[in-house]
Length: 442
Image (cartoon, rainbow, N blue to C red; front, side, top):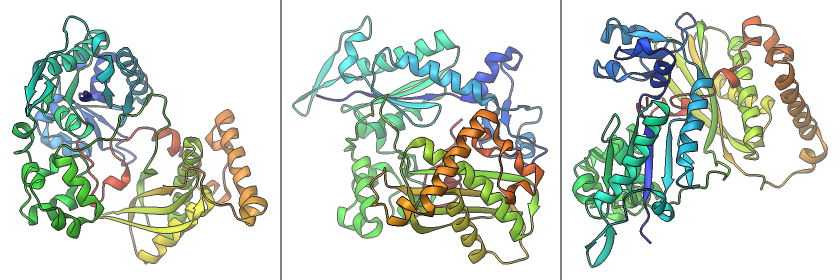
């Protein structure tokens, strides 16, 4: 059976929710920003009016003000965004239980087996290449139904892409914003997709774009026609994946709403009020970040990680990312130690560090063999201690129990990055040029 996949993308989500709580912001250029005094003053989201003036997610506050004089900046309220994200998904659940999140404001829905739930419109089909396919008119009706229901009940808008796979559905939702439906079907996909820039394809980031363009593959259509052997030679397995995506061959299923999410990485990062000038200051902050990463790793039940990543941004806004393979671990102490070793290997005094990030990846989902030391030695004891600390902090607060290295700095004792950085426009690993596509989401 031909699949019907909808990708929904809530328009200017954070800013839209802020307007629900402050109607005076309607029609005005608005940016949801971090704390300017603490140098976390970057744009997390913006309204359509600010977007039209050139304001982008990731701009500093002063950059946004320069592009858009009179822009109104408001602080984020992540609890509100989480609440509205849940409300939106409750609407989707009326039509299907195949709902896969892609961040707080995006979802894929597979409505193939639930189309009769949609009112007023019986499925219509047309013949192409000797086979029967859903008409573009019918697919557009399904996307419009979702959009209109969210807008009517919650007062926020959503853009929908409707297609026969996840990649093209995602591509479609980006093409008509705000509050539009784009159909990329078996009947029209070559016409719609072929001329789009190659970087519009899901997971094609800056580095991959440069490489593809250097090969003359500037559009998705040209990529689809590329030689398989040439793509494998230049990109390895990812080359095969890119060809499959460009040719409409993505067959990855939409996960069930109750299915445990599989993470590629777990990360956290912070920008600091003052430049960090010493190894001691860097190490302390890496422990704070590693605490949050380790706690999240335990919560998500991904098992142990075998790779630690470090991201550094200096006072000149230059970014650096490096990683290393390690023994499988979920311990803050080990993650922090590896991250600090990476820093010392790559940075010698004098340095001025503006921001740091730590991530882990390579999860074993509980499949790693446990060594004698891990089962009965120090590892098991340390893991028990860290899980106990998690529970104490949940009950009494983050700052009630701290490591000595962190307690030496009162400001870091209160820096609960795990709970204050619940939602981010993009992980720190997307800020570097590692081939990931960060996008301008909100």
